[in-house]
Amino acid sequence: MEEPYPVPHAVRQLRDCHNVMDFRKLAYRRLPFPVFHYIDGGGDDEKTRARNTAAYDDADLVPNVLAGVARIDTSTTIMGRTTDLPLVLSPTALQRLFHWQGERAVARVAERHNLWFGISSLSSVSIEEIGANYAGPKMLQYYYHKDRGLNAALVERARAARFDAIALTVDTIVSGNRERCKRSGFTTPPRFTPASFLSYATKPAWALNYLFRERFSLPNLETHVSEGSSSAISIQDYFNEMLDPDMDWAAVEKLRNDWGGTFCLKGVMSVADARRAADIGCDAIMVSNHGGRQLDGSRAPFDQLAEIVDAVGDRIEVICDGGVRRGTHVLKALATGAKAASGGRLYLYALAAAGEAGVERAVMILKEEIERGMRLMGVRSVAELDRTMLRRR
Image (cartoon, rainbow, N blue to C red):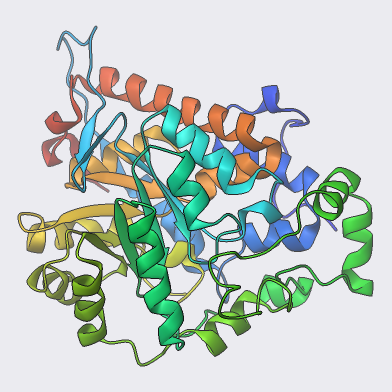
């Protein structure tokens, strides 16, 4: 299979990676193609997936100079926790399929850098293990299932494990049309088909780790459902069959009350929904379109950010989620009014490329880009970024 992008330079080892897209190239080299395209793909024609990053190109930074920036402060407070960077490692599913270290690697890096990170309800490491072993700020990305017993169990397990927040994903009422996954036959656990066997066989390091390390499972779900752990299913079918399309605002408010702690809605894209989230007492919203995996043709989070901040930014924390590939993207989101920027692929490519070492290098690169960008912008703290420093094309 040809690479789905031009390769102007060789990226063969971790030391060759100098930005997020370099990690993407290395991940492509190291993953079987069904797994790579699950990470990389979007919905339908993938217009929204591409727009999520391209949107940042339509805003220019306007720097100030002579600001005395030898010492700067990159810290911020997000959902009650002070973090070292205004960056959230968004929760994503199935991480031990991308590298055998999976969520453990991401948790260690997040703890080391004091960053918010999250695990999915569909994580490949349990809520209990993450809660017991990692002290950094952490959220559970909560999927609302038809199985009410599973829903209640997820809340109780997150509470017992002392998670700092639940982030309810609200943009997966049905699955987006993930055509790359349909073509590759990707399932969880992987189903080895004649079409995909050669791809798995030609990535022996991945295959040996998958076959001979601990059994892949979805420990947060397998006490209630077999799908995804012992019974192979596509993510598209999982969403369509297992998640509850009747979820509404009453269900959200009940879940917020049942949880009783810090509560975030992930997948808000309209002003009306942002206002409703603030009205029912949510602590934060993630302006997000699920990485362009759901409604293709929808707006990019950064394109929607200003009007949502203007409507509710004084009542609720707003996080801009998706498309982040550079430290300057983080600065543009903050200048627009977001409390932080977040993303999944920005560290998933690195995880797939080199496990914990890859995630560490990716976070360090973004940290350096944020710090360098702040100095070049003439700001000593992230609080000094505002819209006077942005111009839309």
